[in-house]
Image 1 (tube, rainbow over the protein chains, first blue to last red):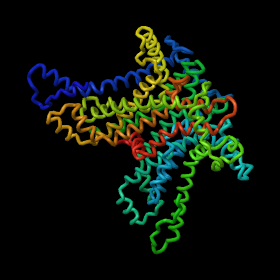
Image 2: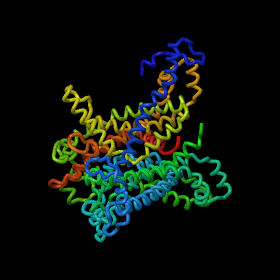
Image 3: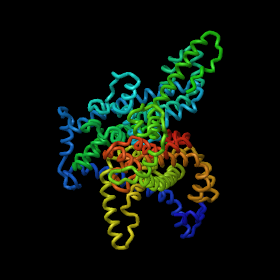
Image 4: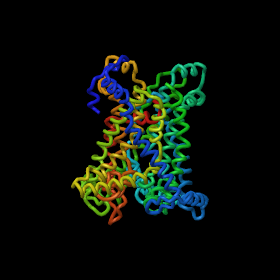
Length: 319
Length: 314
């Protein structure tokens, strides 16, 4: 491609009339598309093609190896049946209820904490330059590292419980990480720890973007600080709420590493999310069709959230 | 944190109320700073303790007799699965994977962004939307087909090896992971550059065109010199993402000598032979975290900007 780059052609409207030049200039016209083509083709094949492939597999009875004879929606029927199998809970039931708990709490707490910290930091704080990076650094860490650190911190025999016992609070009891009913909440804690600083940064950027005149005008009108935030600032932050929600929802549905590193799946798989379910069923339990079906369900969920968002984002400014 | 009283200007009436207000704010901020720093602190402190001190001491206490032996052990001796040669090999695996993957995906992203803003064609929005959506898909939905394809490529590589004595990198785990990360990172890098170039004055490009500059000349002479910030942002973003990836790494290079750092770390921590050496585990975790942490400390501003660019529309 660099050879094409070296050939200097005038792109002025009046092209040379010679045939050679017109081929070259046509090539020059096509060049942008040629440059973009490999990336676009890769996206088509490796994203959309592979998604179709996964969908196809979910309608077969593939076990350890892919089989390509369509056998109907059996995998989905099994997942559907498992959806209501709560006693004893099927892995799928556990995974999707965990997704509900984790998704709801993770998004809600991250938004609340992020907004709260951003408002606090926006009060002309000395040392903001020190505090902001401290809140945000977990985002630079791998979920595996986060998981290892929190696993240690939450371990009843080593971490917080042990420490408080040593300090004399012997009745303190905190073994969520070993408890199959509560282990998912430890994933929420570690997840919030990791992402809330980032959400804070998003809100802070939003706050800094608000026109100071509006704030001043409201203050002159006698609005209290609380009113100012509730009536004026937070409504103005709506786009940030939306972006933050999208980011968090997308992170939540994709969460996989954290569960593995923090809980190794939890006692009896009790900390699984659908992502873990997919991985285990596809690669460990030789239930490829069921694994694929669960991947399709994850994708559909994300699509339902992302596509309307992208559509409105890209439509808004038809430049 | 310095809970110094606020720079309270002596407002006529509510001085004390204001001071209390400031103290509460600083107190809360300090409390959250502790919350965010705690796990890192515990990890760091533990990695310098002896096992004896860990078992009998307090998690938050500073090491009585600091030792860097756990770090050396993690680097060169600890067991990952059955091989006990430390994590150094896996660290280099990650480096070898990250550097090419970041460079290729960033460069392609820059070119894509350039085309999608300055050389628009019919349907450019659709093309961009399709690439953008690819950023958000759960990778579980492409995991299995990619595994199948990589498997076939690997077998083809073996055939080539037998025929020509050289496999051209086909079937090599590092090459595979570079490929995977480039393909699934393209959406983000394209997004970054597209949004950045969107704000770049098109008149400049037009003027250069009239002056007879070609597609690549404009890119090299006009776009690139003005793209330094977004390059830094994209490189950092991609570096962090790829270094920290676990799903692809465990699916396509999950065992043996080819594991990247994250997978190896998870194995170190979950290796259950003999006594669990927490100090070594923590040192290993710190080593795995260091590259991204250093980047964050050195270029945090750009890191944040990258996250934002991915989240807030440009």
